Image (tube, one colour):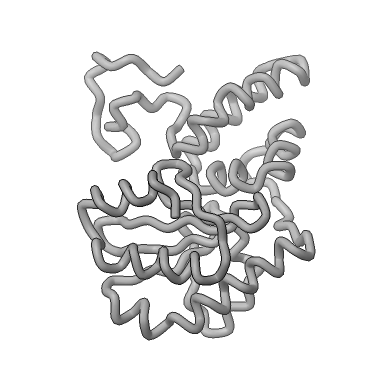
Length: 212
């Protein structure tokens, strides 16, 4: 049990009963607990496969390669229209979690098998954007980065794409991608301010320093 996750659970504004149940399920399945991207993250032999957290409307468990899960009952949802890999289970109370506990466990063990067998999600290009080769390679090599980039809105994806592709040399494109990877992993767009207002749909007055 990671102490940072202990703190996360203690200070959570919502879902005080639901999050510990999800945590217990994942730990009982033998996953390693970490604290990543301000949320509890769970890995198998160094490969991050699951993250949990809460929105105002629900608590969720997110599978990084969820699109590869069988999901015969159609319970999984996309976190965003551009997400090609990640799939989520959402809950509104502890009873919903407890009722689906066998299925959650089955999905976790299936996710572990996906990592054991080395299965990968094939990234397809956006119909509106011709991503650079360097960006596609980064997505192929780093599943967490790919999941984060896919979860960005089309406008934020386009903003990064324009900046990355503007570099004429491949090395410069790689350098730009690596420099902005932490922001992408945090869900920020290229022009988002550290205050997070634009990320939440608000308007920033420009008094804060932009992340870049």
